[in-house]
Length: 245
Image 1 (cartoon, helix red, strand yellow):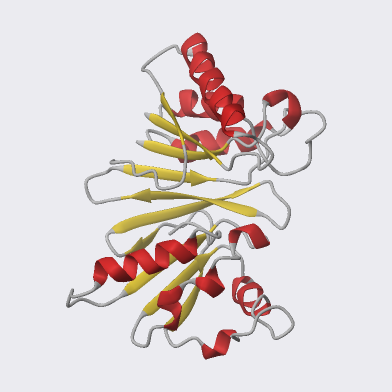
Image 2: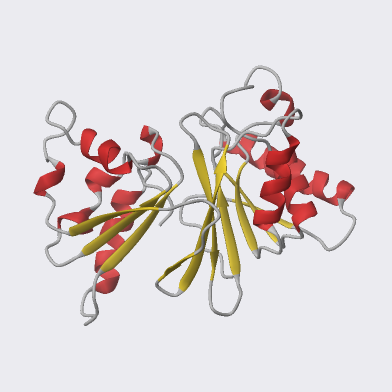
C-alpha cells in the first residue's frame, strides 16, 4: 500500500475478508511518500494492525516515520494508543538511490520537493512490469534538475500515478510553493520518460466531479497535441479503480 489515507479503513476490512480461510501469513507492506496528516490519518483505523499474528512493515524515507504514527495516537488525539496494536509492526528506513527487494518486488525511491520532503516510489516485478507512485511533488522552472531526475526514475514505466492536483496556471501562480504539481507537467515527464500510462491523482479537494472530468479531458487533449512518439494513455484515478499492469 502506498500511503495511509482515510480509505485505509475500508481497505483493511476488505483485505481481511479476502484473506479469510487462506493458510498463509498475513503481511502488509506500506510505502509512505511523506508524513503529513492526510497521508497517515487512516492508520489508526487499519483493522489488520489490531490482529494478533499479523505483520505490518512500514517503509519510509523519513527517519521520523515511527514518531509521526505514534504521535497521532497519543491520548489527546486518539483513544487507542499505538502500543495497544496487536500486530507485529516494523519500521524500515529506506535510502534514495538504493534498490530493495520487498517480497516479489524491487523497490526504489527518489526525493521530491515538498514540505518535510516527499518520496516517490518505483516498483518492478520479476517480469519487468513497473509502476511509479509520485505524489506531493512540486517542480519549478529554475530547478529543472529535479525534472531530469524524475524522468530517469520514470523511464519506461508501465504506469505512473502522478500528483496532478493543479492546473499549470495555478501551480505557478496562486498555488506556488504549495508542494504539488500539474497535469501538464505530468504529461511532459511521462512523454520524456517513455511511460505508457498516466493516472491523474491527488485531485484538488474543492473540485467537483465535473471539474475533475474537465481536467481529465484537457489532459488527454494536451497529450495528443504534444505527442511525438507512442501514445501515453491518460486515466483518471477514482475510488475503487483497479488497473491491470
